[in-house]
Length: 53
Image (cartoon, rainbow, N blue to C red):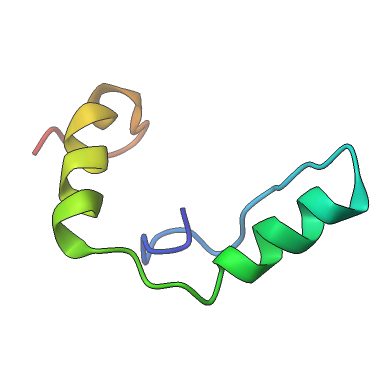
């Protein structure tokens, strides 16, 4: 989510503290542009407010 420049914050959830630690650690990990493109394509119909690309 945070790789999208239109997103200013993300809501995360955790049931245990260790889940929160893992999620927050992932923020510092860059996403491969090819994987991001595949994810964007797979979820394109759910991008409310975005024009179809």
